[in-house]
Image 1 (cartoon, rainbow, N blue to C red):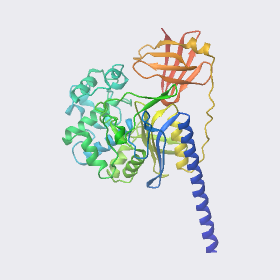
Image 2: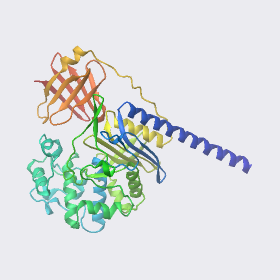
Image 3: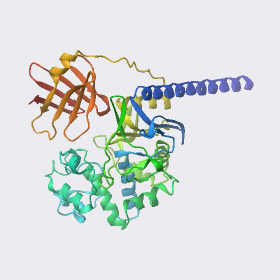
Image 4: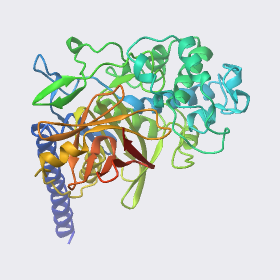
Length: 439
């Protein structure tokens, strides 16, 4: 009897492991298919249990020099940096350098409503402080270094969007301010704090504050793919997104970080519970992440053409992380397929057959479009049989055909419906819905 039970259990484990291996081979093929079609290239990792156990890398660190990326290539992680900043703030709270009720006016009294804004509200994006990256002028200075005084002056000149605590509205300005507050209370640079409090204790040798991208140090540039060529995306000066998006890392190290966070190896479980106190699905530097019948937490990010994800599901002990440095694809779909793989579920391989629209119809859509109250114009033009869109001060991106009048750009979640009889575009991105009129 015992022999039969043991044999059955062993057989069940073998079937599970075989299925898991098959799913991972399918995921590897899926990521290869994205790369060969120039849909997405980058670095990808899964974790089951307490360790990363799948790594896949495609594409280049430096496309011009044909320098391939590898598992140790560092990428800019964008807003995934906000998790690190929130963890550093919770460390400061544990070490009595700050409290969650500390007021912004203790540091920046000239910012509107600062006596009413708390550190907790900064971390949860409930301040009403305007997001400086939403403004057209941001694209005029983002490649140039900025001092603390210069950035704070930019932030404080904007009128508040709402009263503190009234609602949640994502603003990079909140985390830029938190980065500077951490430097003030510790009298150390943000880069030093990241190393001292997180990277060194966890032996994360590839996680640090970035600088000018240097492929000679195995750091990846960001690209967009255009006319059969990888074109380098201009760099944001890393002084600007301090606390909000200034870190470079790898997916494997990001997973090690979030697993250590979950297991109480950086901050206490009490502090982590506070970070997971979600309001409007956002905690302290953490977003609540739904997946089928489960919930996890983490963050996504974008800076230039880098797109990043770090999600962890404690009940399943499953984590996914990836950073792409070129993408013309819905990164949310990559997340879904990776999560399914991590949880031993199958996923459907995409159909990459491309729809087309008559060239004469595309030409009718060309022009510059404006929406009342929106700071950026959108230029629409045809190029090599494809419809392209370009917002003021930004790089052009290709629109994928949905129908003769409907197009989308999955990497940014953009959908456009053209109304040639009215010379308008119905524009949707997330919860934002606007009507742009041709000028």
